[in-house]
Image 1 (cartoon, rainbow, N blue to C red):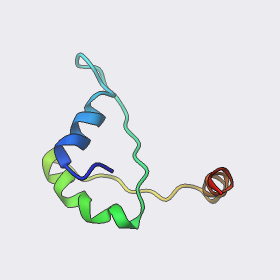
Image 2: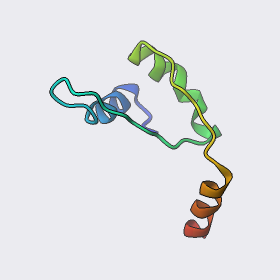
Image 3: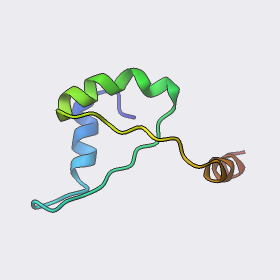
Image 4: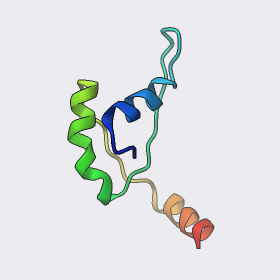
Length: 65
């Protein structure tokens, strides 16, 4: 997650161009949670937080170890 909310908003803004809808998925750990309030304030909306399915988490661990 970017340290600066404006950087995050700029990055996710690239998912929908010229008025098109877009979807942005960010992977963040508990260490990143302190950044959410500032990002939500900048966006003017709450960010939905979901826990990935266990099988996906295991796949990521296998690839990074």
